[in-house]
Image 1 (cartoon, rainbow, N blue to C red):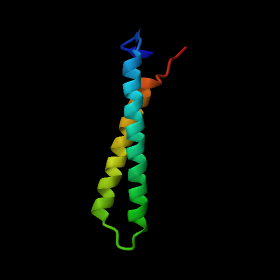
Image 2: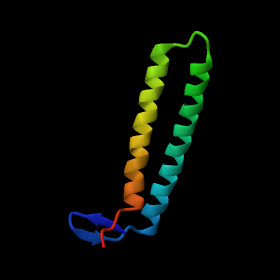
Image 3: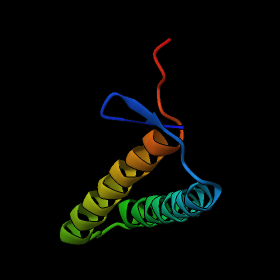
Image 4: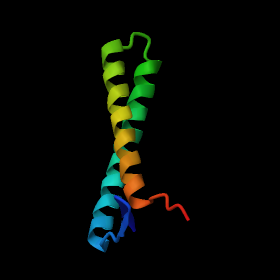
Length: 78
């Protein structure tokens, strides 16, 4: 069930499956970046530029995850 501009629209099973797969992929990438960040931060001489770039990628993935979750699990005001 998806709410679009004031009217209810039903999401078909194929679209929902695709969104769930994308969500899983994004969550995996987010976890991988988190692990990479942890490794870099533990290194004595870590590369600040790489660290900043990875943090930015992680934030972008989190935003994409939030958008997909909003599409899959909309807040329905009763």
